[in-house]
Image (cartoon, rainbow, N blue to C red):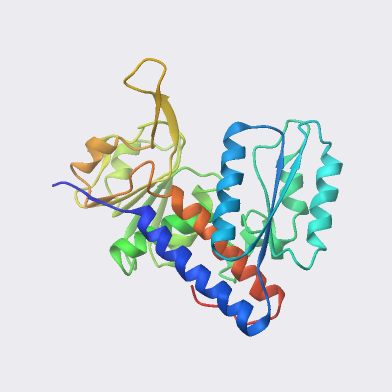
Length: 295
């Protein structure tokens, strides 16, 4: 068996087209243009790339893109004051502070200060609680994108056994809850799980989100399973001084057994920005008291 590659780029591109159509409808029918504000503190090279890509995608969807770049020595209070300013700006519907932030700033304090109604990263405790309670919430982008990929690939997920490796607030916990909401039977595994390989072999859907390069071996995969690899790890390349990106799954070995698998790069990654844009449209509708547009 050779796994079918799940084309995250194509699925994300189709989602972004639907988002652009929704933005156009809001502009034509309600004179409303969703606005996304991104705040970057410091000079982290990877973060600068992410922020630039988010800005490009936001503008391509017809939305307003606002970027605020603060120096690395910005105090926590100064950053929180900027967040509060954006909370009170009616033209801003989504707020994202790019993580990581410098060590003098508490990431949790930032998350807690962002208005839950504009928390397009879906990390505020209020949104996390609403997700667990089955109430409407802005949900984290990477988990949301992962579940979209699984649904696009498999259709109805009801009754499928999903194993999630990783229990972070950013991916593991929310993706498990989203899969539970799709009527999956969900097992959460992590670094302390006994006989992790045996647990993984039970999975109809395996979501790997541990941040360890190629940790998941080929013989951990149930034949025909759908493998969603959330990991992005930079490792040494074949040529001296070169690097390459790999996931948390040994792609070549897993592909021999899996039915479907996401590549790295080109799998989950493109879905993250697309879902950020979708969250911004959703937030704009809710803040304006409008019915949400199905995207």
